[in-house]
Length: 176
Image (cartoon, rainbow, N blue to C red; front, side, top):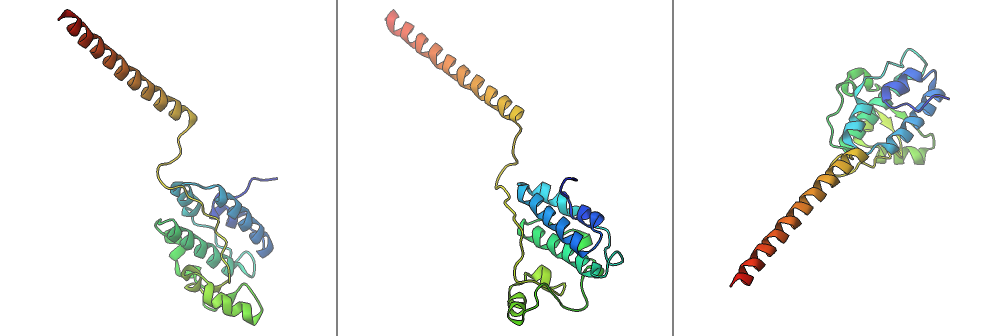
C-alpha cells in the first residue's frame, strides 16, 4: 500500500480515472488534516499538478477542482495563491455540479466558495479540514531540552547572585 499523497501534484500524478482521482484526493484531505503549519500547507499546494484533461474524460473538471482547492486553502490560510491555480485552463467554460437533484443544485449555487464559483464548479459542501496552529512553529524535543537547560542555567545564576548579595548584606550588618 502506498503512502497518502502529500501534495496536489501527487494526487494528479496517481490519478488514472475520475474514481481513482476521487480516492487519491480524499487521501490528500486526510494528509491535510495532519498539517499544522502554513509552510507545510504551502508545500502541499505549491507544485503544479499534471494536466488530467487528456488522461480521462472528466479530467478538465479534475484540473479545475485541484485549482479551486489550492486557491480556497491558500485563501483560508492567508497564503499566496499558487500561480498554476490561476491558469485559464484551470477554469471550466461550462458549469459543473457535484450534485444532481434540483434542490441540491440550488444549495450548490448558493454555498460554493468563490474559488469554486469562479471556475464554474458548484458543490454544496467543501471539505477542507485545516487546523493550523497559531503562533510559532513546533519545536523538536532536542530544541525544547536545549531551551529548558538554558533557562535553568539563567535561573540558577540569578539565585546564586541573590544569595551572594544577601550574604554580603548580612556580613555588613554583622560588622556594625
